[in-house]
Length: 201
Image 1 (cartoon, rainbow, N blue to C red):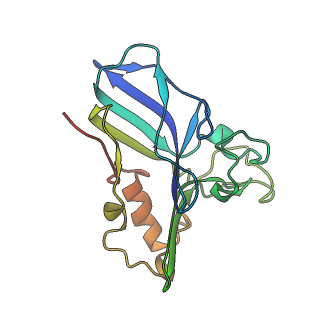
Image 2 (image 1 turned 45 degrees about the horizontal axis):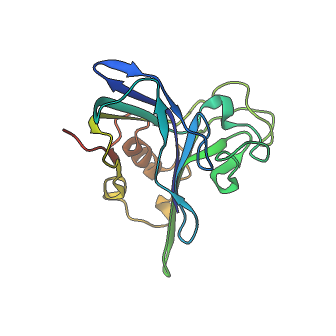
Image 3 (image 1 turned 180 degrees about the vertical axis):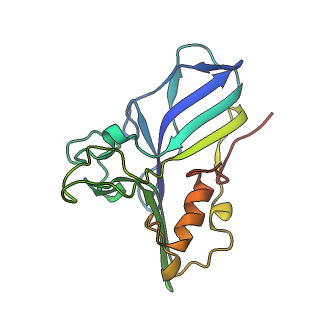
């Protein structure tokens, strides 16, 4: 399974930020898109949006966040609209959604990397925090000189390079797990993402 939430989409053309809005459908609402899927299940690799002004094929820059905004991250998934109602992309009301989920399984082993907010304070796991989590772990992705007619790539080789996939390197976003520091940084948490790339001029 490879799935991740995309939010806070911005597109820059001629040096100016263009106003864009996500097109609501099964995979996205007006603020968040769920990309990817699981083997044998439904899969989505498209992000659909509308712009208030015509966009050229080549744009200066695309920015987006891998994650769910705090304002909707900790709401009850049973009452939220798609795509924030997918139970396997949610931890608890206290922690909120899994922003990025990669599960790999073979006959010999299973390995997982799930990113999401940590250090979220509330009276219990079933209560939503009133203030932002200490480790929001939202990854900012910035791609320059992008061709809108081409795909944006997710390079799992760069994400997993040098990591021996075993039980000790599984990452559930805990700051105490050494592999998490590497994986979250490569994804783009507090750093430039090396996982995502666009088609340049």
